[in-house]
Amino acid sequence: MNTVMTALPLPQDLDQVAVPRPAATANPDRAQQAAEDFEAFFLSQMLGHMFSGIESNELFGGGPSEDIYRSLMVDEYGKILARTGGFGIASAVKGEILKMQESGQAHDKSGE
Image 1 (cartoon, helix red, strand yellow):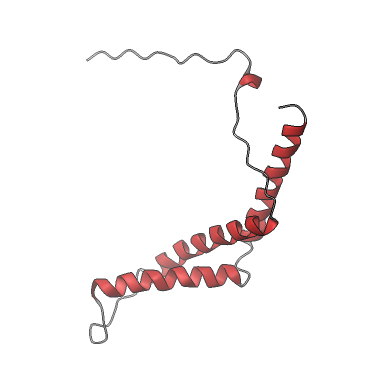
Image 2: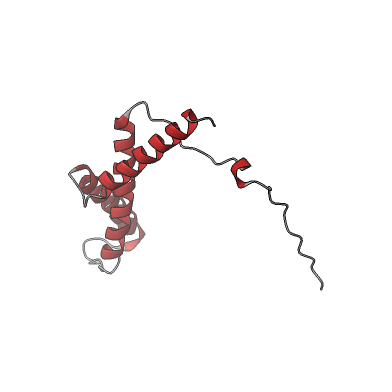
């Protein structure tokens, strides 16, 4: 089977390429909420691995329903940790969100 690979045409000037820019945040509280949501998700993923090795006691539960409720509990742990300060991930993410938006606004004002 012979396959022919063709190269896609590239623009001559890379400045002509449209680059998506993040929208400006009129409300910094939304950036904080997005950062906390990201940290909560990250922490719940880490905690999920920590709880995955724990076996259940068949006398008091077990089965698939315990796995479901355990995952919900781990998600709530992640949300609580992020809301009460977390590990500092949310503040770093919020700073990056705001920095990207500021650079996007400056770039838009400069003529694009």
